[in-house]
Length: 158
Image (cartoon, rainbow, N blue to C red; front, side, top):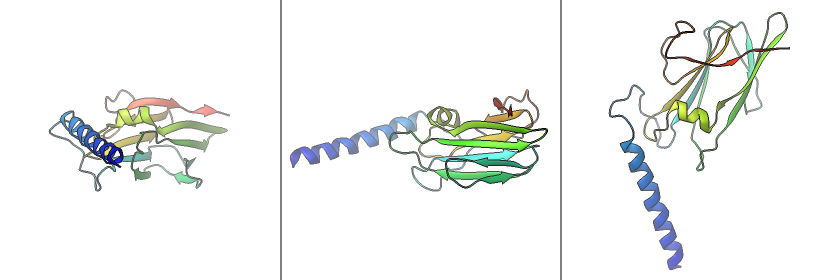
């Protein structure tokens, strides 16, 4: 029984150590508002800039549709091991089927979004006729040379 309580105490100390270390690595000022719940630090946004009628389906079985100017979003907590993965399939018709299959969230994307336990980390994806762009802030998309948005995926034609 003593071993069990020592193990629990050790996990308790390790959790607090990780929280403290992560707190020191974060900037004192942040442009993102605080999370509504503790350990709920991720929100994914998928926006359509100029592609007419995009249909997409992520890890959940329900397909969704986006039109120019619309945004689809959800928030979630990372699992204990940080292995959350949301894979999405996007498609639109213009002289044939154009599609993108990609991870909108995985451990690599989490690093680009940010990894702060105490503030909401945001992942912005923007669909354009060129392909898919990523940003971790919601600055207005100006053009392909914009420093705030990074080109990530191109459309594949079938």
